[in-house]
Image (cartoon, rainbow, N blue to C red):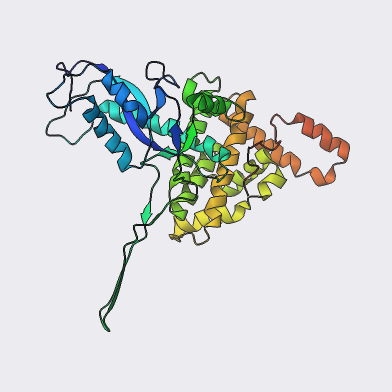
Length: 367
């Protein structure tokens, strides 16, 4: 550790968080002009150049390559080739005798989770293998070792394969990408509204809508990366609650109706929502673990689809309650479809303020 002599002075620090799923291909770092203003992606390969350019007191026999190796070791421990770098200004002391990190570390981590959540959501839609990136600490693993003893008749079985399981959405591969490609993708359709809320801070959406979208991204990213089917289901349904509820205690049938109004009946039926909400009810109220892993998988994809359609639909509404009232109106009106002729149906379709057209994804819709 090497800290400035005047440790009580506020300084600008880059907080580096190991990040998996992306391998930055740019030859040079961009810490002087960060990709997202206060956040960027830094390759482990950039570290020697970054540290060599710093003003450090050189100790005999201890050069910048030695310092770079310490940072590389952090990434290697997490099997990461990239750091999500977050810039924050504050006081960093060594906190001698304390296990607490400096306050700016907590603030930086909060920001890191926002940006990592956005990247996870966007890149899940871009992956041929339906997997995505995330902070190394988000990509949870479960060891699959085994230890059995037969005390009565004498027998044992020990398996130490070192294998582990991860979420079906988490990746173990790092996709080579440039920063230009990443930025172009994030600020293109259908992700621009999400990116403006999380990255540029220039969103024109009303605060209640921005808050709902940002919170939904965070909860969905948690659901994406957890290896537990029950926790995955809980996170996905919580995402839906954040987006579609405005009053405490609203029943899931109301949420289901609003999802149908947003996506359209045919698209919503694809996700078979009733088993999703029923499984969540059994888990929360009866402690019954999810047995069918297809249910939480489908729940995550439903939450992802709703988030993307929600973000591009709310731009013409004054606030979240206004948008929810609109969805309630659409659902009730469409219950009259069987009693309408083609002309009335077409006229009603023209009144819709949101677009239900299928999202154009590079590898087609999710199964």
